[in-house]
Image (cartoon, rainbow, N blue to C red; front, side, top):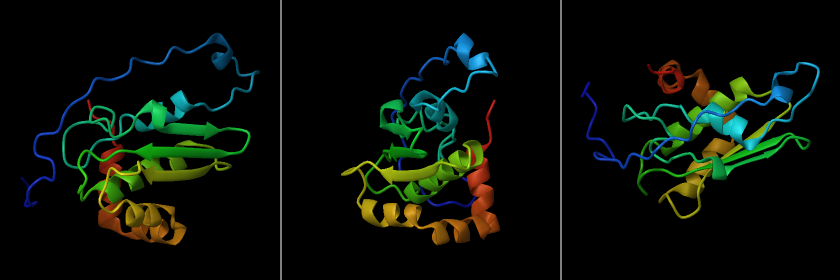
Length: 158
């Protein structure tokens, strides 16, 4: 297992995936400005790889379209995610990967809020505080090893 300790969740439940999004003709028209919606944001994060398993966050039901909120005119995107187990040691890393993916993918006008679903993690307040702290997030991304792990989570698998 490449020198790592035991997995937090050795046998996770695997969930189905949503189908591909159907692109509307107005979305293909470059002359029409279309708003960013929940499905577009969900499509950005659904294929993020879990740091412990060869599965996506969607397959593990960590992210769901129903837990994505977008206020396009207000420039706010909020994602609430659900760790697979209440003591998941990877929760902060997963939240960081979601934040990085959205910051890299969305227009810079958006404020991105990432939170653990209430009642689903033993340290949800501490993790939420870390994910909301811009200085902590910036410092984490300056750590080459941590950035490499985040980038592995964001790399598309075949």
